Image (cartoon, rainbow over all chains, first blue to last red; front, top):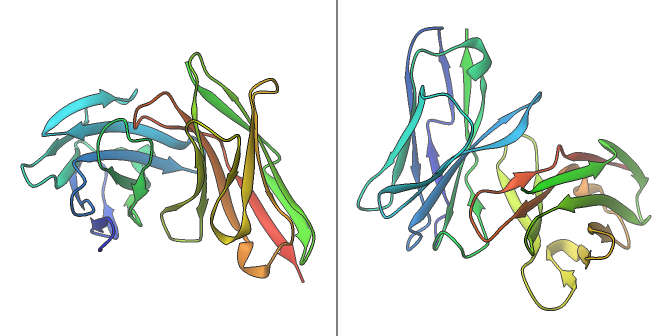
Length: 113
Length: 112
């Protein structure tokens, strides 16, 4: 069974631009969560989607948004990029919202110049 | 509210020695607890988890952890370190949701 697939793996943007990251969950998994990992703040929860609905949202500004499609694939978008948005963005999937186990992808490393 | 504290951002052990990585948690409800490992330029891989039941949890690659409610701890151990264990280890807690709260991580170095 294929794991969680994230694209692109690496990308470079400049301040003010926007970026869209994609995540394909493990087949059969309906919940997708997004996390940001930085050296200074560590791993922080961004949001979770289940059945195309946002269930939870972390403490991030409105520039960070996401969505989930009917096939459970998810995208996250960051608008008006700032230098501090440089991070590894990790997607994780699970069977449902309370199954207590997350399977992570390898991440999308975003560099903002 | 949930939170995790990992004591020691860097731990070094000799190959073949005991590995002990410390994790203390805070949770307002009975927690789910997890240990993940991250190798360079990779995502997180689940080592083991505690949800309910037996307090001694065995995971992959010879790791295990014991849930001690009285000490609010969930320390990770492995009897004999291997070179391939060198990585970053994260403890996490959740309250029955996929909103995990991670510790700041412990970087494990294995000395040959």
